[in-house]
Image (cartoon, rainbow, N blue to C red; front, top):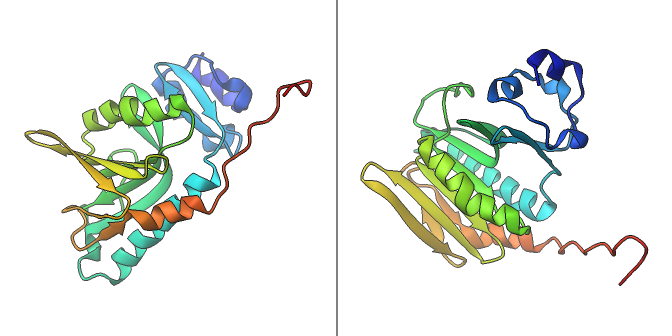
Length: 216
């Protein structure tokens, strides 16, 4: 599939499964994508998924709120350059869509094409394939891209798993629901996991739709 062809079509849910190179994906203008979907390039295949549900969006926004409070009011808040949700990351050769990215220590607005975030965060979805993706597939890719910390917030197991990418290897920490997490990358910032899980709990679980034809 050529870049010229990509530019001439509308990319949406029906495009899921088409073959595409990383260069073709990167060349697509934002206007080519149908809004309200998530787009990733995995092993040369375009993957289109629905947007995250409220049980993921609400705690994600709460985390963004806490980070911005830290940046504005904490004496060491300038350590945080910027935090953004729903970012496409170039984890060669794939293009992954993360729930939240955090840039620290640059002292400027990051260049999103060159400055990879120091911290990447995923909120685990209910589907088994999404669970495997967050815990296994993305872990290897993010660490290979030199992410310094990868946070996996799991509202189902009521924990947060933190993978710290250090010079002498990867250190993994488990944060329990009643605990808060602190990192040297954001000095003075403390994230109470229970506060985020409480936001997720506000939203009821989605009911499964009955099969076509009304069978129970």
